[in-house]
Length: 67
Image 1: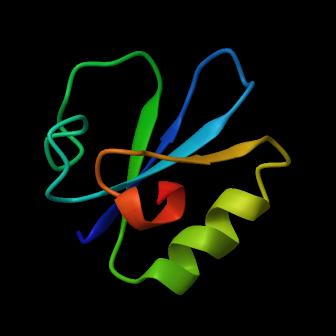
Image 2 (image 1 turned 90 degrees about the vertical axis):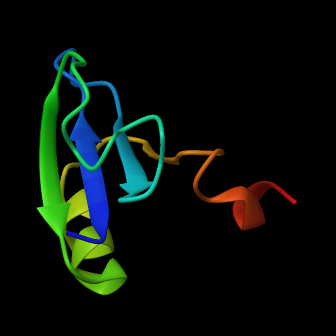
């Protein structure tokens, strides 16, 4: 998978990571919540926006969003 979405168990956010991110370790990092993998960014965003929760992008693997 190229992108990973972390849906946190408290239900208060959804976070997007790229597969090479050290925070998600290709969707295998032990962290509360559910990892879901996607091959393309468009599908990732469609899935994430339907969660009706704030959408966060990891600032380690999406640095261009915070430049």
